[in-house]
Image (cartoon, rainbow, N blue to C red; front, side, top):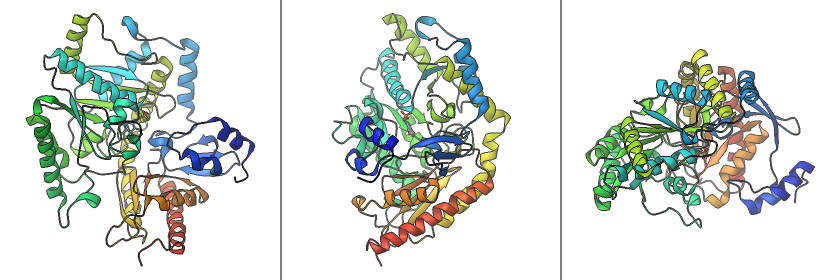
Length: 462
Ligand SMILES: Cc1ncc(COP(=O)(O)O)c(C=O)c1O
């Protein structure tokens, strides 16, 4: 074992870390972060890092925002907890629901609060089932998701997720979830297939899947506007338009998972607006509170609300809800977060600086280690390959992504490596133009160091 600090030793002896190779971790130990300010975080040794991933795609307003701290403190002093069960209510939840209805990308009737993206997507699935039972079509229950989608880790949400690591040995996905093709042009388009042709094929494959499953049994389609954890995958031109046509034909409810893309990430308030996706219902989380406290929501359309109301009237209650649904402190922080987005013109600011961010990404696409660098707004993915010409991926066991993350860390930059050795970038929305330059300069140095290392290991195709 390396020499680990006291805190690191205590960590290794006490925590089960999410998304970590638990066996290997005992040797490497944790990176312990102590504090944050703006777009930077600092470890226990006082080293500074640019938080290039906004934590987990969530700290949109950066760290140490005193207005958010104050919103939480004053709500805690006034009313630290109240719930929404049995018709009880409180001001922060009402105000937040009103604000969400105002800014939603589609007409919203009511808002259901929960605590995480996973809970929001689990709730979506339950609402679809409950609604269709209420509407007298009990067979119409299956949900179509996509390969490489990420919708969370609870049993239903993990089933919607289309990544092997979330299914293998967890005995998932559950019945009733089916996955259609992933709109990753670089990886899955046939030779010479244009974006438009690829999108047409994906829509055709979706229709074939629905027909195979029996349209009377297929209830909904769920999608992230830009896929995040699956590898930062930007849909090809015309994709959502074609997919929506197929779904409309078979009366599928459209669910947008805006957990990453919501609240300005792509340069509009919601990602759906950028990629031409018109959903019926929306899941939001993460940047809803700039991750100062956990809170998430499902934006419920009128048609669904009417069915829920009628069904609960029959049964006697709507039997769903979390203790912390609409927690007043989290809701007060979210209200303040939305106020700041509006007052400071955060979404317009993202739209203004996104071209600089995207230009840097395109430049990284020229790097000898990079097969494709892609993105939209202030999100990016840098896919590393062993052979640029043939797009051959590295063997996952070679750990190229993890190595690059370590080099980036040594350069003072936090990024993540996703499946397929794709580095993801998702900085706080408050990043400044000089800070964007600094982020990419650090990343370029990390890529250069990874290239040297990979050459030394003989991992690159000459
Ligand atoms: C698109 C998307 N949906 C859902 C989730 C799950 O959210 P949580 O981790 O809060 O349960 C995530 C998390 O990264 C996400 O990126």
